[in-house]
Image (cartoon, rainbow, N blue to C red; front, side, top):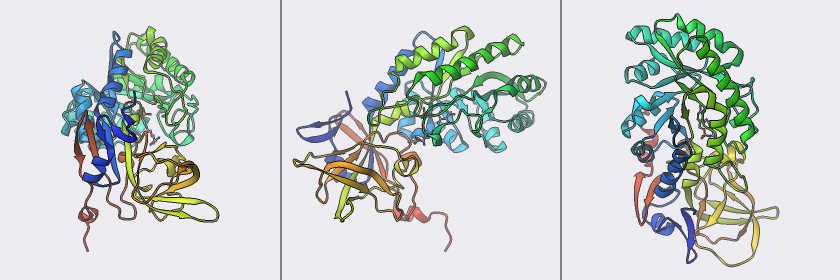
Length: 413
Ligand code: LLP
């Protein structure tokens, strides 16, 4: 059951009517559901039950401390891409020993910090990065545990901006170079090969590309261990998609079946890096109507959330369903729902059938829990939204609305 549903015509998050939150903390505001977050984490855990695995929640999807803390309490590990994300994980009570570090541009400083804090695995993305990690390891008198992220050259069949597994992508090392790099790393004193990694893209809605990529990487894993390496972890990345409108992504069970079938022969401990699948449908962006603006060409509805608050529509032409918080009767008209930002791409919902709202009406952009707040900016000097976490009939602010004074923190006039 969706954690966001209408009761007596009013949209609720679990048992909390959304107008109560809007009245207390204002808009735009991100609202998350504890039940949805917990249920999704448990669903993935159950799907992999009985298999050696660790869920490493991908922090970039939503890095609020309350959400990281909630997953840490469930036993989650984390997938990070910066020193900042590692600091967040620690601040939220997560364990570096359950954390993997990806990204094509880790700095030696970030590597040193992570290594001295006992990171589980560095997912290394180039030959030069491997040299840099070796140098950091030797300097600290440690062997840095690493996996190579290989590029399996598989088309993930998702939006090209979030596809990462093709030869032309900046991510990972070319598949054919992996064997030689592991052989080279074996002679380096600051490194310890502990795993193999891949990630082909995000918002995957079909199992075929996952199967193709993971099978290829699982074979390589077995080959490497036959060659005398002692790899323990096979990191299959993240990417499991969610329903925004009419997509039918694999269920956690189907996903697990695909991964487990492909990796069966390896005996590896699986590392999973879901982001969107855990948080995407667990959050909405609450916004208020400022103005209606009928023109000859189109009817615009101007809301108080903009592309700086929810960047996905402007960046990827992504679709987020839009629901009225209080249902109105009437006939649908086609509207463009736009934000206040001075850019033509600041259209949050294009050509949507909607009963024409009135000023001050509340709306919710659905499925905004992933890559919503974590990608928000202060463009146009707009303070970023507040974040609220609902739990049953209770709710609390888990991030205050940014204040105007915060906008120039660190600046000198
Ligand atoms: N692991 C790695 C190495 C990744 O690069 C990513 C996402 C994930 C895991 C988590 O992927 P997920 O399970 O969330 O699909 N901003 C875009 C998505 C960018 C994804 C970047 N990497 C969006 O809003 O659709």
